[in-house]
Image (cartoon, rainbow, N blue to C red; front, top):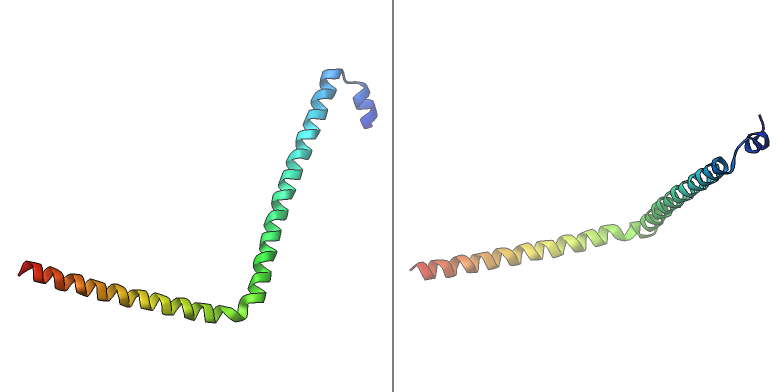
Length: 91
């Protein structure tokens, strides 16, 4: 059967249901396609960023590591000061 014959055999309510169903399916397909495109674009941006800034990554990691080491050293010194003050208060 052709689509034309099927549509001619339907009443108005059935046609409306078919049209609404097709519209909802198209809406869902468009939404899914947009989401997939967003994911693909984000992946491309990440890939391009990785390619462009790959040479700077070790420098940044070394900088972050040195900052973390400084923070740890500062925390240790503060902890030692607190310990000393606590001992002084106990005496």
